[in-house]
Image (cartoon, rainbow, N blue to C red; front, side, top):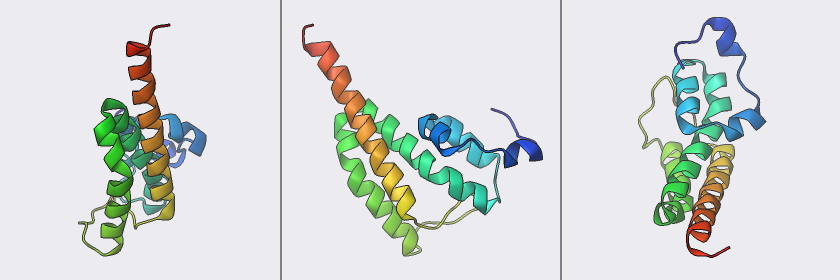
Length: 121
């Protein structure tokens, strides 16, 4: 993705677009907006969603653990147990919600993949 200039940093994708982006693309968007807490707070929920979606699609057992991991991670952030840097955001219900949506999307992708592989058409 490369480094964004100031005009590109301010023009973040809308929420619908971010909901469909890959984890890598969203992570790069966060890297390119280091230190901009408002941008980090906009991007973070969708980065969490994409990560949970992609991990859940990869493995049903991984995906099944994500609802607990998502809640635990946000709780750890709220308790100050997670190291902070210039891309960190406070714990938020939006991050939990988007993470759970991603976990559901990943599980659905995984189940459909297994269905298509093993159930005759």
